[in-house]
Length: 281
Image (cartoon, rainbow, N blue to C red; front, side, top):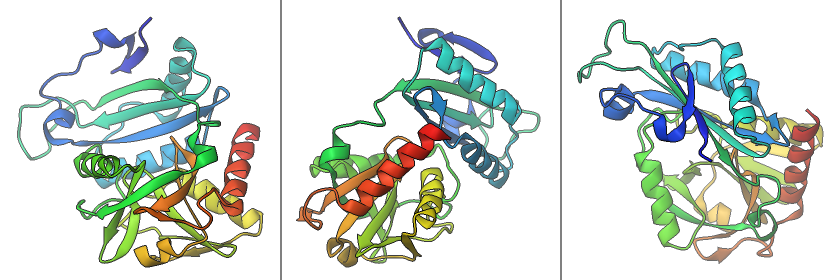
């Protein structure tokens, strides 16, 4: 049985889903996207995802073809039609169909697609063992705060990390870690969590937003500042966050063991707290 997906107002079988070859998402990566985690049949941090989506759309002067309430309904319908209890919903909006021209077309209708992916977000094997990270050069553009569908540099970085035997790549610019190819990067020293502050240099992670709030509520100290690769290698713990990984321990960076080489107590606490809050929210 194939998935049911959403394309421009219609729920269709995935093999029947089509968009034009002249869609600007295909021609120019002219669009933005969001991924919402689903745990026990509940959408996690959906309102925050929609806030970020709206901001990204404003930054590229792109109209949303439906209301946020309609987007919520679309997500619920996809969950129901695909019997999705745990996993993710990916959606993206492009500027739509127009003859190929670099300037924005007038009166083009935005394209909206969405689909589900099954995944065990709460109990993946990596949560117990931790993952390896490889550092890679950050070769992306200057507006990383926009959640653009133009992900070729991240795909290249993820592949480079994979070829080094790592799960994730931490991108480095001027000796400082910016973020993961598809995640936010953190280190822990003592009982202090350090992560880079928000700016155009990184994406404002939705899971990051919730995690920092939870850390404050549990009296864990947060430092928002850039950190070096050298600091990361000397950390007691490290971890990443994203909608698809929640809070995931990092136990090795560039073949260097972090702390004990096992998921540490601060990371475990933050993961447990995040999942508990998501389930109760």
